[in-house]
Length: 125
Image (cartoon, rainbow, N blue to C red; front, side, top):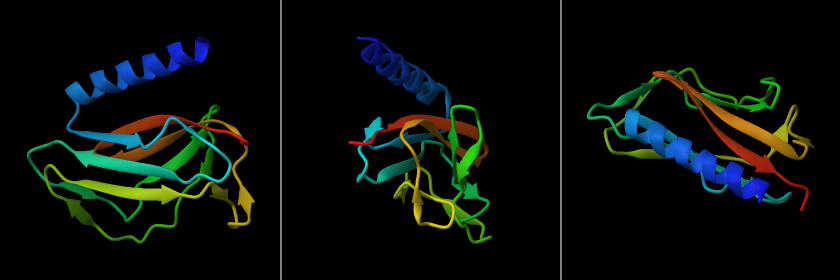
C-alpha cells in the first residue's frame, strides 16, 4: 500500500509539473529489474526549439544526491524542435562500464533551461 501511495503521489506531482512546464522528462517505467534498460524521454512542449548544451544533458543521482552516472557527452549544441521528443537509454552500468548500479531509488536529473528530475527504482529481480 505504501508503494502505491508513493507512486500515485509521484504521478500526480509529475502531472502538476507538466502543467506548468515547457519541457518534461519521463522514464518508461517506475521500477526496473536487473536486466532491464532505463529508457529516458525528454519532451519539448514549448512553442520554441530547446537548445541542449551537449549530446547527453542528464545524470543519475542516488537518494543522497551523489552523481553515480553521467553519460559521456559530446560538446555539441543541438536543438529539439517544438513538440518533439528525444530518448536516451541507460543500461545501469557505472564507472568503467563493467559495474552495475546497485538496487535502490534514483533520479534522472536533466539540466537544460532549468533543472528537473524523474525518480525511478532499480531492483535485483
